[in-house]
Structure formats: structure tokens, C-alpha cells
Image (cartoon, rainbow, N blue to C red; front, top):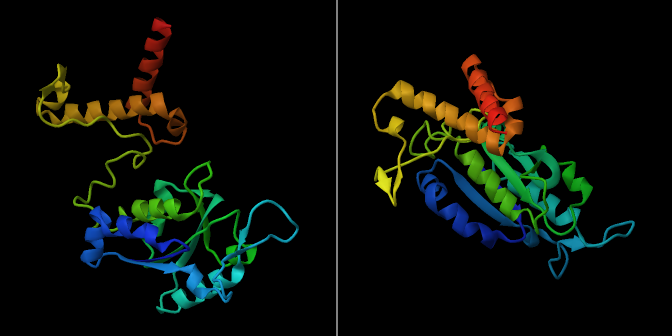
Length: 247
């Protein structure tokens, strides 16, 4: 997959895209990253990319001309048209399902906005507006990095194990179960006995129940959409009964 990122701060992406799993995937040719400086396409002698908004208001707005010219130049570098994404607080929220969908694309173009907004004529060129949460950041660069990292995990060969992307929080609609490694006892804290007895059926049962418990404690809203079995529902009911008795 090729991912083009349009930004006024391309240097912010150097460390993220060249390190860890993303860096190794790039070295193997699984992923190709290209960061493009929108300022290079500005026709203004000072290479400005922002201007005052029509109608007044606080702050500056990213101009259409530099971004649209940058998009035209970047999309023309390949016969494959990229799926164009803009990072925006008003966009649909990033999710595991959306990340899987984007991972099936051959090419992505991600626009990292800045200032108070982007000229709406640019937004009309986009296929998706995506947000990473209900909060505001100083720019779209960090959200763009989050999208790149999240999507890349679902591309074959990026992770060391094909199961890793599926066996984590949100992949099953639940939060992830607790994890432990050696030693079995440290600072008087021990690993649950069920994980040491080698009974894989019991381990899977324990992990499922712990995932349900963590989800109920931290993100009960996820339980409304999760695919729950009869045993899951019975376990959750037992938790509620215990709470009632202790309450």
C-alpha cells in the first residue's frame, strides 16, 4: 500500500514512519510512505497556505489553491486513484471496522489540516472525513499518524503474527483481557493460576470473561454492540447479581 500525506509539517512524520513496525514494513516494501509539503504548491511569494475566512470569524482557514494543486500533483503520480481522507473533528470516528476497510485499499491520501479549518472546496474533493475522537488538537498531523498506524496493522505482513491484529481490544467488540509474562511471581504479585495449568479451554474461558469484565468496567457502551453468546450474558448477569449483593 502507498500512503501519501499532505501537510505543512512533513518533518513531524519522519520518526513515526521510519521507526518500529512501520519502518520495517517500509523497508520490506509492504508499505510506501510519502509526505508532501503543501507549502511547496503555494503560488503566494511567501508560500502562505492560510488566509482570513469570508464572513469574518476567529482564526485563519487553509486556502484551497495550495491543497488542491498538491492533491492534483500527488494523485497524478500513479494510475491508481487514492482514497482521499481529511482529518477533521467533524468526521466519522475511526474504528476497527473503518481501519479494516481502509486497509483493503491500494492507495490512501491523507490530508492533515491546520488552523481553524479548511476551505470547503477542498473538503468536496475528499472521500472521507475522519476523526480520532471528540476533542480538538492543534492540527491534523497527529490524527493522521494514528490513522496510518491503525490501518497498517491490518495489512498482511506488517505485524509479526497474523493473529495479533485480531486478538486485541475492540477486534471482538470487547476490550482486551489482562496479559502476563515471566516471572510467575514478582513483588508478591502472582500470575492467575489458570494461565499456568496448560488447560487451553479454561484459559480461553478465563480470557473471555476477563474481557467482558474489563469492558463492563471501562466501556460498558461497547457491550450494547458486541456479539455476546448465551454464556457471556450469563456471566455478565452474575456480575450484576454480585454487585447487587455487595451494594
